[in-house]
Length: 123
Image (cartoon, rainbow, N blue to C red; front, top):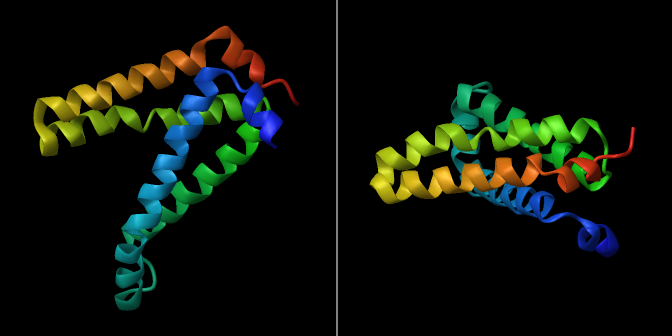
């Protein structure tokens, strides 16, 4: 496993770090979902959180396995940074929007590089 992480191109490493941050955010906000589950067994935020959690874990697993399908899934997960620009812009102002824009550019440029694309070789 450690050799797999060392062999990763930098773009994939950046994506993996981003995925871990999203996973941590979901974990920290999970008590909100659990509190709503006490009142109603199915809630909108609960469905979104569970779908995002499943998509995130599935994508991270495929990236570690170097599967070809992981490339498009990782681009899909990186696309979550686009609405993040507006959210951070509304809550943190211009510095937040600039940070989210920089994160988005770094993620997409890193994943679109040829060495990152070549990482996903397994059928």
